[in-house]
Length: 280
Image (cartoon, rainbow, N blue to C red):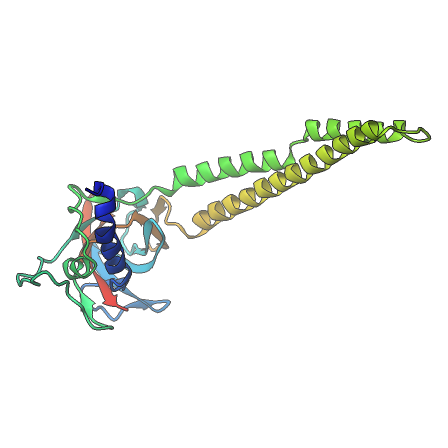
């Protein structure tokens, strides 16, 4: 009798083939109700509380995050504190289709918009449960600080003197100088060549590591600068002022709708978005 893993190979191959042939979808977010308010080509959801206007638009998906841009306008006579860490969203999902696919997955036509349940069924995937509580936005301040600290650490590694490499190079140079005008045996020549080759190889690797650390420092500094420039950061809006900035949330792709809860003073206003997936 064949071992279990050998008997399972045909089934695994079929599952792999089915997964490879599964449809793919383009994911996007848009206001649940059209507002005809646009910024840089993106439609904004809008809500008002205590005369303060809040607008929100979807910017993009990152590998692990979804990015919105929030805009506050304060026409009141009192100051208003805007805190990105106070934002949350609640995902929801439309019910799974009631009909039976009779063992066959659905096959939406290209360009068709489908629900999360239909997309999962078409890919033979199990939908994850909805989060048990609202999902909070990231506070950019700890991340900005951490990025600066990591960038400084990487820059310090890039600038650090490699004393071992210097010692190896000095030893190689010393053996070369000592050999001048002397008749070397084959063993002495091979020993000197080994020291020279070891010093060269080590310094090549050391230089490559320094370049990697320098590049990492630049990338981290660039990310920190981007967050500082574009992220919505905690701010006090004086009367008549407005502010715009990016909000970063953890992604939750298995939802059909997201209700973003935006803080306005002691109140919270909802901004509703539909998360759509279009068959490619």
